Length: 158
Image (cartoon, rainbow, N blue to C red; front, side):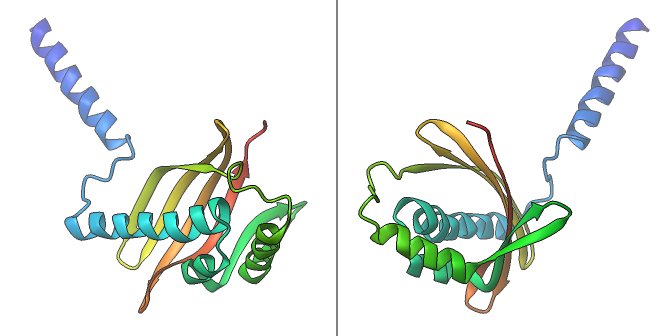
């Protein structure tokens, strides 16, 4: 009897852990393929465009024209539009102080969740071995492909 209660408890614990683990057990092949496409889009236009190579053209292809970074400013929301970000990226790259050897960012994709034509991505960015940002990106799939439409983030203390 005691053995049966232990087995039942173990099964119940396993089911409970699976239910609350955050793993999406219903991911289909199409969503997995879309997640890989999103990963490649973000590597090219976000990680390399906005960070490593500072490529404004790649950024323009990756971000929707209405994209903004949203951050708190007191009790207000501050919006930083893509046009400003692309221009500041262009200026940083043209700066004599820009050193591509020191501008290496390592991405870690924590989560890519896809539901039809909507997706969210949690991405950690590391610079010189330090975890600098955790980004939360929202994407939509348009006729010409996936575009980042919004970003909120956390900058970690050094």
